[in-house]
Image (cartoon, rainbow, N blue to C red; front, side):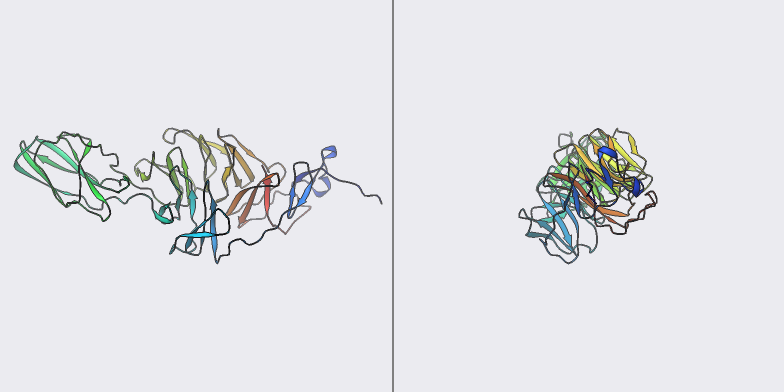
Length: 410
């Protein structure tokens, strides 16, 4: 019997019966491809092996950004150095088995484990944002001064040495008579911070910085004309923690349950709890920035175009992304994720394309992890899934019980 060459190969296909995988002169599909790579010319090559670079005990939350990479081993956060084989301990004593999510920002890497939200400062992990004052100041009014008659508002905040400021306390109000004196007491102090005292003009609505102080009491004996720095952190709090974190156009985004929270512009640690969130019908499984907007997955997959304050939620796919499987495509204004129906690529204008749905019936999963892999001329998205379910949409003439790794060339 003479051998009959087959190929070129077009990729995997489990939607067709195994006796209909040929596509004529165009080539042929294969039902299963394990530990091999499909090249651009339709040939298979053996996948490269791997060797242990960094040992660990209970490693998870591996992430690589623009300039640094991190992972958690048990309760310790490590940074992977540029040689790929040595690590630096950033923090210890983290809650065990709590997944850490990371994102690059214009300033530094931020991360959250669902219980708190942090930033990486050099070789240390510190809280992102400053907790607002817990106590409101007390006001007392007396006569014998020079203040104008009217109602005054007072609030306080904390100021760090690097200029970062906390949210301000809820304003307290006092009515001062003509030629009165206003005494501000019980001014909360915190170690390592200055306290900023903000005061309105008579019957004014805006608050201006009256003093930066380490004292617990201040006396205002003369008219205040509002010539200080305007209070811009009134009614603001720290950004809440969550299961996903991302950054786009100077704002930080955190998904916690079914709510997408966002920070104030260029103040990543500050959040407006009254307005700074978008609720969804189900828990959010993906938040992926892409140049001009955000892809968000909850009950389905949405595109938020432009400013989050004015943009609409535009549904782009009627199904969800698998949690933990999204990322940017290097050197392109595109991103990718593994969905309930296979690998999807989205561009900067909200246009999406499912790369697998036409030929591969994929398995839904509870969560996963993914990476963009470029090696030997191949560009691939590699996904590892947790809790995959047997699909019922594949052709029934074949069943493959061995699943090593799924990947799609981009």
